[in-house]
Length: 211
Image (cartoon, rainbow, N blue to C red; front, side, top):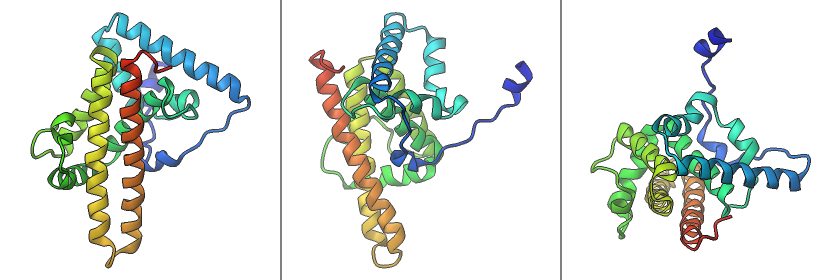
């Protein structure tokens, strides 16, 4: 058993997991399990945020892939606690899987947005691939041992900057590489949706209404 764990290398998952759906035999049971596990996990860790436990949660998808989390939370409403946790892990996975593209999108978005989002997100200037990986891990860590709503606000701001960069790159490629432009347009739309959901979740958390 120890040998298998030592040499196991998890399969890396692509950013297209934004689109992935997972089957469920009993939607009511899936919903019950999703909410109970999300609340139990968050309550336990936040009541006693042991650094080793938080480290394992931040590194979970790198060590185990996304499927276990997906089975629990992927079908939850976007503005629920399990749905929020699922989206944060997906954002993390997107950055880890392709930090070079993420850095390109972030820098393009940072110079284009007319808002405080880059400041709220908290990335250094300029932010390279390593800095963005560290940033998204820090944001995820904040869910477990920091101000939960602030972590969601940072994730939403981060998503808006990425969405802006993706939209501008789509414009750049529209005439020369239409397929690539379409892919960036789709990513921009998804990231914008995530930003709205995460901002709404932050507001619900502050009202003690994120269930």
